[in-house]
Image 1 (cartoon, each protein chain N blue to C red):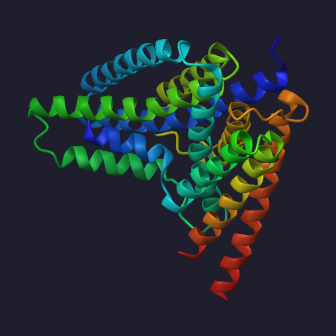
Image 2: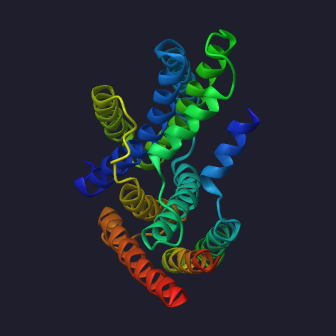
Length: 64
Length: 249
């Protein structure tokens, strides 16, 4: 069961930096959508945030 | 009525992702069958499949009772994590920064691991071999189940997405039974690259829907996001590849 639990976690988290950045992007988008009542801003944050997270994580991965 | 712009990417993503996962599971089941015989391999695979069916029934009933916005938000976030992880790895592999997945190598490693467990006449090893096959089916199958639910649940597309996954299973099993060798010629990284792009796009779309974002063009935003992630990924491959060349020179 431990192996299965670790494998399930591994489905979503490989590079911890990428996972944390994506979660951070979702939090900022949620604040924009529910706190500022600006869902279009949330959409922009999601798209640009995920692309930015992918770029940074991939470049860091290449350097390693 | 659900548009083809939604059904097409959902079925394609579940088909391609399932193709990759079923090939990986098949490699291990085949290694078990060649070392310990077909019986423990088949029993393990069937037991693993039965466990997956139970998990699907449990999660399937829970999904029906979850509010749609919460389902879209949860699945969207998980899809972004899953898709971006696959896409990052596929970009690094396509650029040559990390090694490609080697199905023939995985087959050989699994065979030698099973050989190292003891004498070929030790019947207890059939249990271990069956467990190995079952574990492979469960672990790779969980990814298939997640992808089918993730791309299908947000718009009631579980059935088309499941059919995509089922088609992949049938194709891999037919090809595998016919050639009885690991399917090492399947272009796994290209498939993972495509699936990573699609799942990342679906993830952003569903998360946005869960947060109340009114995407321009509604469902047409999905193919637009796919094009955006694909373009970004292709540019990243070029940048990483040229960076690698500079380092090597």
